Length: 340
Ligand code: AFP
Image (tube, rainbow, N blue to C red; front, side, top):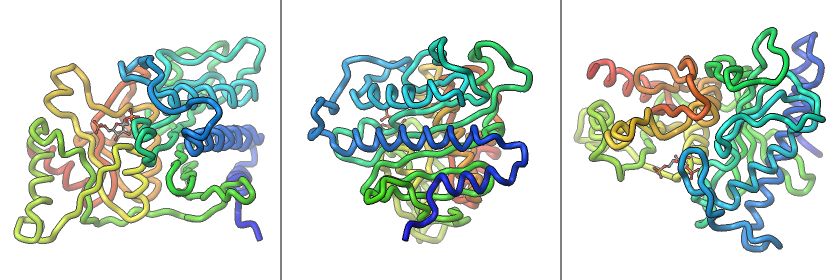
C-alpha cells in the first residue's frame, strides 16, 4: 500500500482555495522532479558516466568556488522549471542576476528562488547536503518581464518554502503556511511519501550547532550564550549541552526540526571587516528555512530582528541566522537586546 504522496498532499491543500488553478501544484511537481534528478546526480557521484565530483574551476557571484555539482544542480533546476509556464523568472545562489526565461516560454505568476546545492563542499566527503527553495507570488499588477525588484519581498510573503535533503535517505520538507510536513523518497516507486507529518520543533533543547572555529571572532551576545552552554551543569544553565556541526545549514536545520536544537551562523568581526552582514543568504537560505522553522513552532531571528520581516535590498544579501527551539532562540535574542 502506498502512503500519501507529496502531490496528494499539495492537491488537498490546493482544495482549501476555491480560486486555485492547479498552477501551484504543477510548480511543486516540477520542483520535486528537479530535486529527484539532483538527488540522483549526488547519489551516483563517482559512479556517474560524467565526472560530477570536484571543482568546476569557476566562481559564483559570492566569490565561492563552484563544485561541478553546483553547476549541474543549477542547470537541472532551471531546465525543469523554465518551460512549464508556472514561473515568471527564477533566482539562484549560483547566478549573478535573475534568470529570465527564454522568450518562447509563457510567463507564470510565481517567482522561484533556490540554492541548488547547499553544503556542496560536503560532496567530496559523502556528507549530507541538499536543495533549498522559496516561492513568491509576482507582486499585484506586475506585467511584462520581471525585474530583480519583484523578487525583493520580505520572507513573510513566501507562498511556499521547502528543501530536499540528500542524506542516507532523500527527504523533502515543505510548508505552504499550514504547518510543516516531511516526505521520504521511496525508491521502489520513485515518489516522496509522507513520513513525518506535522513536524514540530520542541521549545527546549540542550543541543546547539555553530562553527566553533570562529569563537575568537564572535560578538559578545553569542560568546555569552555559547560560554554558558559550554559551562554545562556547573554553569548558569545548570545542565550539560551537546554540539553538532554538519557544515551544511540544511543538514543542521533538519536535525533541529527532527529533535530540537538551535542553529547559529552569526555575524562576526571578520565578516564585518569585509562589509558583509553575515554568511548565509537571506533570499534563498535564511528566508525559506525561517518560514519552515516558524511553521514548525520554532523561532528564526538575526539576534535583533525576525528574519522573515527583513526588507530585502538585494538578491544575494546576507544576514546573521539564529533559528530553532523557541526558548533558546529567545534567550539569544534577549542577550542581543541587553548588549544593544
Ligand atoms: P556551501 O554550500 O558553499 O558548502 O556553504 C554552505 C553554507 O552556506 C551553509 O550551508 C553552512 O552552514 C555554512 O556555509 C558553513 O560555513 P563554514 O564553512 O564557514 O562553517
